[in-house]
Amino acid sequence: EVHVVESGGGLVQSGRSLRLSCTASGFPFGDFAVSWVRQAPGKGLEWLGLIRSSLWGGTIDYAASVKGTISISRDDSKGTAYLQIFSLKAEDTAMYYCARAPGWGANYYYFDHWGQGTLVTVSS
Amino acid sequence: QSVLTQPPSISAAPGQKVTISCSGSNSNIGNNYVSWYQHLPGTAPKLLIYDNSDRPSGIPGRFSGSKSGTSATLVITGLQAGDEADYYCGTWDSSLSAAVFGGGTMLTVL
Image 1 (cartoon, each protein chain N blue to C red):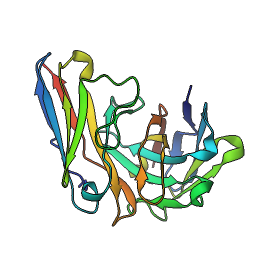
Image 2 (cartoon, rainbow over the protein chains, first blue to last red):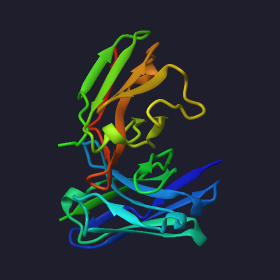
Image 3 (cartoon, rainbow over the protein chains, first blue to last red):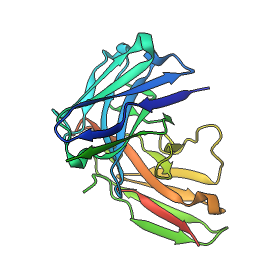
Image 4 (cartoon, rainbow over the protein chains, first blue to last red):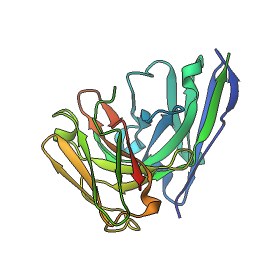
């Protein structure tokens, strides 16, 4: 059975950085892309970025709104993907989800298994 | 402002049918596959439809999707109280080199 679990959230001071983890099991992690998505309070889902499998070069795409403020990486040997958020601001307060992303190439991906999310609260 | 446009809310009685629209452009829906997600805030979003109209195993046939040109549609028939949730369409935008979601539609079962 596929499991996806996010961790690393919490209460963080504005200006600090934070690294979230996404640990997956039940499938060959290295064969799939992974995406990060967040939901701020009262808002909709916001796609943050995607890291492809090594089959597709492990390339990464980011949403324009967060490019330069986040970094996504993966360690296939640990079945884990990471989201680093730099210089946190109040507007980064959100539930952060990761999702397994079946697909291939440059532009064919969807999100079939999601974690329960990890809450990040940024305080001033 | 989302790249994909959905109605903010929709409501219907149990047993009825609802249609949720998702409007985009040639750079996203017009040339890429659409997926649909059901989400109760604070829980894991659930994939309902992928590749415009395919259902993952375990998703009942009451949920169906379609795409025409630069628009996509999710139809839910035989509405149940448990269907009350937020629904999002998603696709890839080739111009942005990014995945995009609609703004979400809150479904209320009266």
